[in-house]
Length: 472
Figure 1 (tube, rainbow, N blue to C red):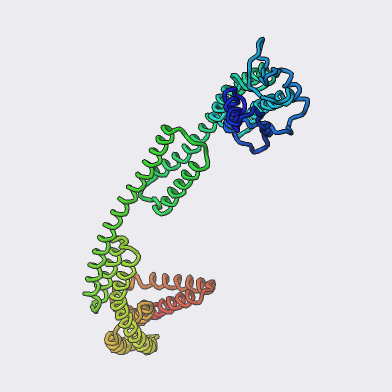
Figure 2: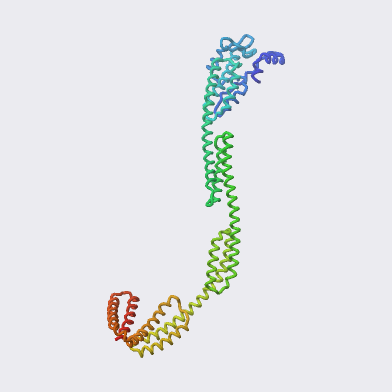
């Protein structure tokens, strides 16, 4: 049964006429005191007061104190003292006065419990500003002329205090909201600035895959911030998103342009390399080793300058080019191996001739020099017919053969000098020079420790001794 049905005289009369006799309504159960995790004050205030139960959850002292502000007339009408006057709050027919006062005093305590609950709720961290407004509005309606018995003035004073406390709490919530929004805006701005910095850093050396991963991480961070942080005002949120989206668009457009340029460069590189391969295949069977080697070196330089055609294409193209190059260079190496073998055989032949040539020395007189010259000429003819020797041995064997010719020529020149009257004046000076040079060479030979250098000095000394013998 609702409060209105239990308390208004009109409803009470209708109930009596319907039943034929005037009977007192059963005592409703009191509203229990709010407990932890109770509904909001607004929802709590919306609940209609139920009829008091025979047993109350309030103390007898509280009920007695509230009852002191009311009285019950002989006809069961219940009045409450409200300021300097009193007003009717309801009627409880055919019931004892204490029971009637107890019912309306309990309703007073129920209403006071709502105010107390709001007072406690205002201190809670999870309360919202709209919840405060709704609760105050509903309690204002209930406290304006409440059908209860109790200290109405104290009830209204408590409500006014709650209004002031509620206003202060709303301002505190508003300040906290502004602070939280400012913090959220700053945090989201950091995300935006990171995205803008990435967009500004794009260039030829950009690692596009790594940068894409970074943008993806920033977007995930943005979404997580939206879910977990305080709601930002729409204009601010839209402005930040516009900046973030613009940075991502810049990256996507730049990456797309880079990909297009890369594809064009790869296509050009592929075309250039295919042309190089064609040229390589045309000359791979050439036996003009020097010129073709130069051409392959040029092709390799062009290959390096052509750029990359993509991993798969590059691998396939390189295999074709390498096949053509290997065909030529393997053939050239085989030819070189054959030449080296022939040159080594030639070297052995020439070293055998050197033994014969050096056996012609020493030459003691002109007659011996003539005989040695004839034998050396035959050796030189045979030498020229043998052919090439390994490059590293050319100077060594040619020098040895030249030394033989020089010693023979020295004897020949000495004979001519002896027959020339003009040389008589210079003969003694030349002899003295040779003696001095031989003495110097002997000293160098004694001091030299390197076998090769020592052998060279001894050969030089032997030549000069032949000259000296020739002019004596």
